[in-house]
Length: 439
Ligand code: F0G
Image 1: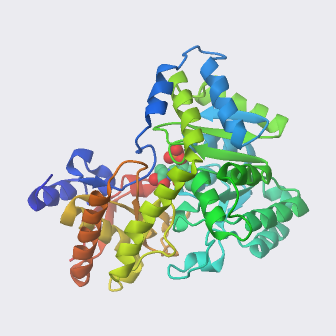
Image 2 (image 1 turned 120 degrees about the vertical axis):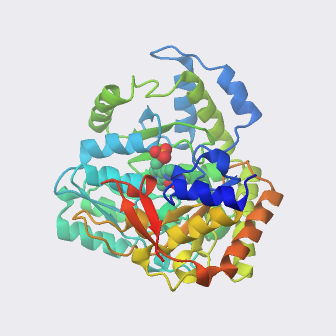
Image 3 (image 1 turned 30 degrees about the vertical axis):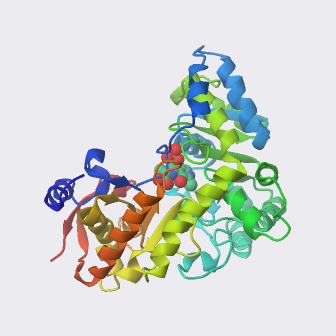
């Protein structure tokens, strides 16, 4: 617990960037659902079973088998987290002159693409950009736009198409199986491989089961295997749906590509049977993957996120609809129309939530995506504040408190002011930028 005075001082010292706060000064931490969940009894038991052999550890085989049970790719390459898989993938396939389309690239994915000199392009359907639209699969990729882009640039300049499931940077919205089939058809037409950024694969599959015609009787694990069967490879952060605190992987079917990935892995992550992870981490992930597709768990997970989102929506706070799987996204531009995007309404709202109640959310908007590669700035498509829910961590009474604080902040909305950036890094500036309030 902190007092308002302590929080005022802490956030000022943090340069008005919640990433720079000490977690001890945060009461309810909704910064991310990445690596912040509670591991189960069986995961902790699996950790005791970890074998730390450098090469060919039994824990590696347990991990590989758990991954291929759901994602039957020929090659599985463990990494210490998702962005390591992205860095390996794009350092092998991308580079200057290349373009990588996606529904919406996550920030680290986009940064890893751009770091190689390539371009990332977001092609989510128009409904996916409108916070109020109730389309059931707002994460879908616009396949006509994809077809046009590949035709225009030439397939030799599109090394891979990525689909992010669920679409984290645009409201945590799911992608339908039908859309994945259509994307596959466009990829086949142009002979371009399809990769999934599958961090929240189980939540995506649950939404397919709940919302897509003809899917309601299916096992989630079965839906996941169908999603995987449509792709040529995947990147994964095991810190999300696999319920671990660390880890990830890169997988594919192509032998030559896998060899290049492994060579890069050895250079920067580790030997291909541990890839930057301890044997005990591999075991925790293997167990987490199995738990992630449990229907009881997923029902609890999706309903508890909806509980927060629907309460905020009912009290008139603009939120991204429908409520996503892992997070509720407050529409800061909608709540703070008097703050122009280039004065960062999302930043203003995230600071206000911290000051009011010690809640830490994260800006997903013009701070994160506004800076262009030529150094200029333009408004991001939306200015959101994400309240990400760690898995199996908070109780309903914690979430009731979050609702009360959001309501209190919404009442003061017209008093909130914008910010300007006084210090920023050349890539992924949102993590370390310092701000000053505008008067
Ligand atoms: N792809 C998506 C869709 C993600 O959400 C993340 C991470 C990554 C890739 C990178 O994985 O963190 O293990 O390197 N998202 C976290 C978040 C950080 O808060 O949404 P990582």
